[in-house]
Amino acid sequence: MPSSWSFPRHLAIVYVALLICASLYPMSGWRETGLPIFDYLVAPWPKYFELGEIVVNLIGYMPLGLVMVPALPRHWAWKRKVAVTVLFGMLFSFCMETMQNFLPTRVSSNVDLFANTFGAFLGALAGVRWGQAIFAPGRGLARWRERYIADDGLAGDIALILIVLWVFVQLTPDQLLFAGGELRRLLDIAPPLPFGPGRLIMFEAAQTASMMLAIGLFARCTLRVSGSALVVALLVLGMGARLAGSASFFVPSSPLAWLTPGVQYGFFIGVVLLFVALRLPRVAQHALAGASLLMASVLINMMPESPYFLRNINGGPVIIRRANYPNFYALCRLIAAIWPFVALAYLSGLGLWRGERLANEHSAV
Image (cartoon, rainbow, N blue to C red; front, side, top):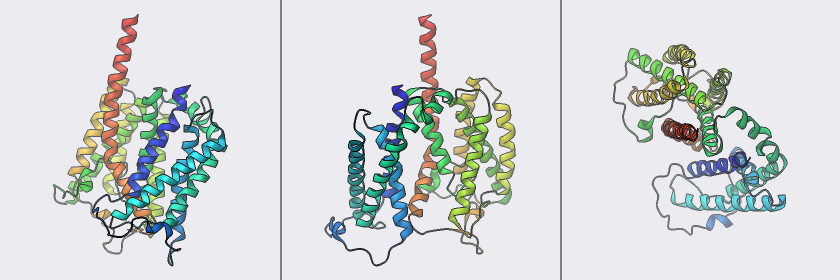
């Protein structure tokens, strides 16, 4: 089906947008340096460098190559697809590195340009080898999508991409479990309420329960099947990502740093609420998912600052700063901040589209 084959194209567009955000973080303080902007292309090999940073740059462009090859016209020869993908990766990386000249906290590097291009090349080879098996209609991910995602075409693609992005942002170690919609920190706004242990626990519990209910019902509204197994699997996957992020990006490793008292209460409340909500009619679930997204977003922005995440106090674990992790961390923060609002807009549009489709079907009868 053409709608299934369009999925890698939509993935490629989203991934390019993510790379732009990560490459140009913090997107502020733009200025001219007065130096030739292309000097970095002929710079010698740096005297000091981190191998991990080169590996991160290489790995960062591999998914781009992987999704671009199946996104290109199917009648093209594989060599042509690889050549176009590598050329795009090189030119795109060249643009990002050149624009970094105007950001005071970023450094343009020909080493990064080479690593990014080579990563796109390796990803393109992977796309030639496995792209058909993953994305071709009736195979791999496309078959899974057609079986489990309720809507075809763009609506189904957006649903799946939003779910993948939600799992991705759970790697952010210093947020509450399933937290999202925190515009306050993004806009550098002070907490509106002072800290108090009881108040913080109450807000954490309510926010965790609301977001748990929201993501569970969001997934349910996008699924074709009526069972709860996939919803539970998604929540478990999100918790696994949070454990992995806390274990990998805190020094010393602190995989349960996010499991505060308020989160524990909220988790159990959320389990009960979701158990009940999954037995409601689909229309009620749709409305409750939107309301829960709004509630969770309001609570996270009203919440007092949590001392559990002030990591430089009393020798507690701190977030690592090596390689490109600050850029990765900032990207996760950005996606987490806007995800609930994008998901809410998607649910609103989905409800209108399904209502119109149902009305057209009735009028046709």
